[in-house]
Image (cartoon, rainbow, N blue to C red; front, side, top):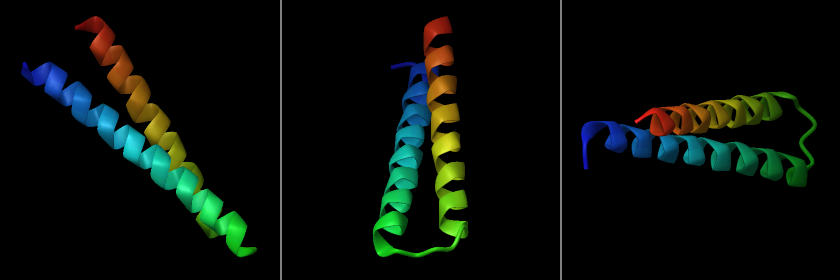
Length: 64
């Protein structure tokens, strides 16, 4: 396994973890009845970061 494919796998894994953390934050906040906005902003940032990392991994994997 070369360095580029290891990097792609790592970025893809971090993207997945970020997506799962964002969705879990959102679900837990909605189910708890908390009316504040800060957890939803955190969830949105985590989800967008996860999507960006997954897209980066896909583009890098395609070009290799």
